[in-house]
Image (cartoon, rainbow, N blue to C red; front, top):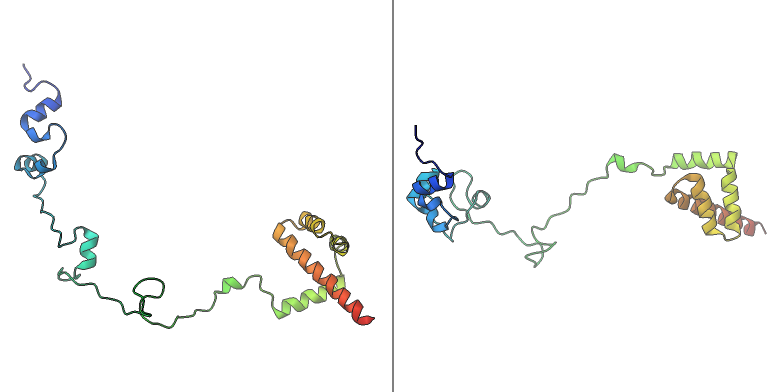
Length: 178
């Protein structure tokens, strides 16, 4: 039994459809021979007056009828057509901050409790040593020392600021006493 069309597949395909051999030519895409081979619907020629594409048709066409719609021009807030101040003049809707944003905010009650504890307990040993360093103007050494004790750079800066404010208040109180 002999097989017909024996040979490479490219040779067989080129015998049936001459437009499929070699690189595709855009002019051959509309030929009836090519459309029959690939079962594609006939293509519409592109018109420059109409936008092409699904997104463009959704934007520029009426949703129910599909008729083209002219985009509405926005009213200007200021004599500017573009930029941050374009559009309608409106009053901004100010929303109050979320409750989750209040974490860490000092309340009157918290301040009172902390001051009471400070008055009763005094300062921790590392805070007293840091205050001694601050008294002799060793700010950088005090920061490094506090950072080692409290863990992070930002917390150390805050603690150094707090202790230097305490020292300033003590100096002010001593000057007032004299």
